[in-house]
Image 1 (cartoon, rainbow, N blue to C red):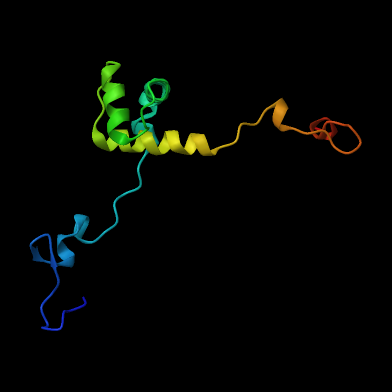
Image 2: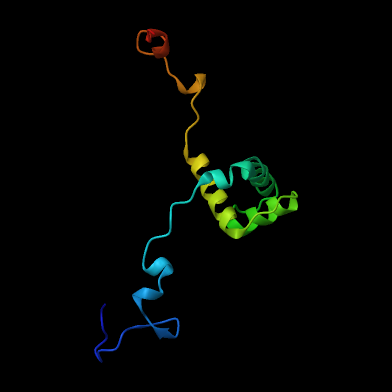
Length: 115
């Protein structure tokens, strides 16, 4: 633990910083399990579309409010996870016929795959 010039521990949130005050005794939070929100993903996607059509930003609070407005209960923790999922979906390119370009000889590269 780093000490200030006077030898005292740093002050964090009005109290001296102590590593044992970290959640789980200094252990990292467990990884999030998306199965806990899988049933809410369709509602989150609908909420994202509603927010976009209303010109509102995709934030945790806006997403949670829109999901709740659709009749679903969602905690802020779950809304945060749903937001991460939705943002990850935006970063994944779609794969389909339009994404596959013919090779230089004009053949579809997928037609050359032999099972």
